[in-house]
Length: 401
Ligand code: AMP
Image (cartoon, rainbow, N blue to C red; front, side):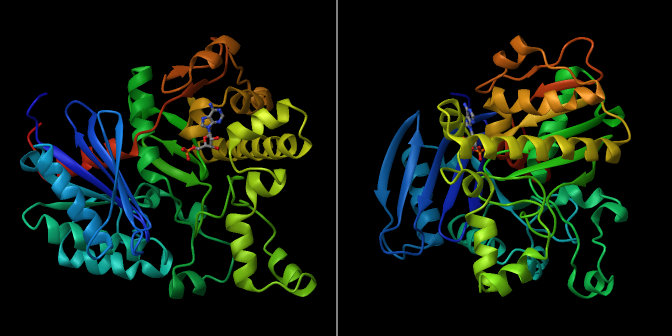
């Protein structure tokens, strides 16, 4: 094993702590872990080391500090502790304040706190995670990498909602987008794969996981994206509805006697692929069910593909031209069927799928999946948000690689 300096990447949720120890130079994860039920007495942490999983109860305070302390002890046991030189944190919302990743200072912490109103479930957990890491690793520099930052280049006509503008100036109601770290990584990798200059390329990138969004990237800058004030807007997702008529709220309140909280919960957790299929939020499972004649699964996949294809057309307008349509995320990287359905709709723009190439670009293998005469390249590029966070952290802390 090389003796490179390492970065610890932390992704803290309200009841979870996900971590990876990365060798940035080798682009390698040396160890990862996931603490679950954090904050509860039955909290536990699972370490993944050399492909093997080890599960331990989280003792002591059972909280984020306990999770980070357990991680610290594991690093010591593995002889990695002294090599960790910086910590990178995934932060969901940076509002308009953060346009790029930044070294965490007391002022940055205050600004992350100020964004809690925009991400009430996520940002408080990130703050707990940062504080726990500061307690456990007081001498290490820490960096915040924001999901929203990449989209701060969107022009006003893309980020404004057509509602009274005072709601923007008073409350910050606008479109912010998400998955920005993934888009930044995939845009770089796409240009590198094609041996082209990112500053002279128009791309539409579809990040299709359990959460799904699509972004227009021109010359390396986000021009528009499908998620909005929250991740609920845009594409059909695993359990989120994506775009709907906002009047559904008042309609359901009047006719189904549902409260705002109940409707919000339903649209976030019981809709999308799950709601349409009445079976599952999992694309792979739906593909199997559809192949066996399950009508709900078939409908769910059709709505997902159709909505996505329509959005690609919209994002081409945002770019003004198209060099590459890129699929990433669990569905984008693996579902040959979904890619085929979507690209078939896009024949109208001259995009043509190469069937064999589509079958080959799976399970982590990147590739161009369009024919030579396709108007633009259709591609599969696996994402790696953890590596992007680790690279930002290494760069901003002046780490020698
Ligand atoms: P992610 O959130 O990026 O991990 O993506 C999760 C989604 O990817 C789930 O809907 C999975 O069913 C889907 N997925 C993963 N592997 C496959 C596969 N081989 N075929 C179809 N969908 C897949």
